[in-house]
Length: 328
Image 1 (spheres, rainbow, N blue to C red):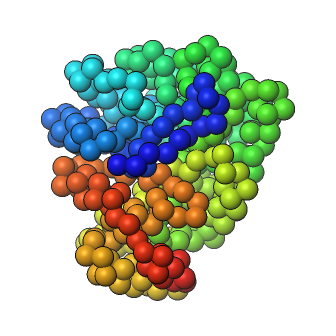
Image 2: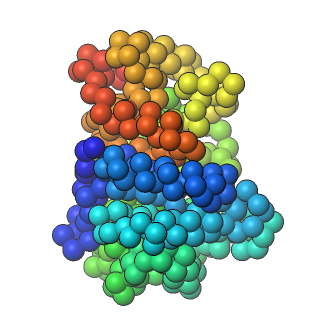
C-alpha cells in the first residue's frame, strides 16, 4: 500500500492510503458480518482511509440514514481501532424526515445543522474527533459565510480535524475557501467528486441543478486542482458501479458520446497488455496521474476488495499511460 498526505497544516494533516474504502452500504445492503470482514481485510492490506456519511443509506429503508456510521462505530469499538485509521464523513444531505430525499428536503449547511449533525455523527462513530468532515451537497439557502464559519468553529473546538467539500460547483468551492482565508479560518482542503477514466458529459441537467451535474469532475475542476496542488481530490464511483466489467450494467446517458468507445478500447487494450482487469487499470491510472487522485471504491464482497487492492499495486508504463491519456 502507498500513502499520501491530505491537508497542509502540520496540526491537522494526515497520511492516508491511496485507496479509500467506501462504507456507504455497510449496515444496510451489506450485512454486518460481511462489512466487518471487508473492513478487516482492508486494514490488513494497509488501508487507512474509510469514507461514510450521515445520510447513508437512507434510500435502503426509507429512513434518514446513519446505519453506515453506526456500523463503523461498532467495528471501531470491537477492533480497538487506533488513530492510524482516518474516518471521513459528510453532512448536509441528510433528509429532514423519513420517506423524503436530499433532493427536496435536505438538512442543509446552516451553522446550527453543522454543529448538531457533526455531534450526532461523532456519537454514532463513537469517536472524540471527526478526522475529516465534508460539506456533502450545496445549500444555496444558507450564506456561504455562515457555512464557512460553522465548519471552522468545529475545528477550533477540536471536534473536527480536516474539512472537505463534495458536490459543489468549483466557483462556490473557491468562494468558500477565499472567505475562510480572508478571515484566517481553516477551509476546505479535500474535494470529493465523481471521477473515473471515462469522461462524463457536462451538458445534461443534474439531479440537483438544471445547469449540469456539479458532482462530476469537469475541465474547470481539473484546472482548479492543477493551480491548487495543496488540495486533494478523492474520486467516488471510480469503477462506475461495475460497469467496466459487467455487460449487464450498461453505461448511462452521461457517457453517451463519441469519446466513450475510444477510451473503452484503449482501456481494454492496456488491461490485456498488463493481464489486469479494467477496474485495476482504472485505479492505477487515477492514482498515478498528473493530478494525483485517491480513488474511493466501495466493496460488497472480499473478492471485490481484493481485486481493487491489486489495482493499487499495478504500475502502468509511461507508454501505457500515454495510450490511455491520448484516447479521445
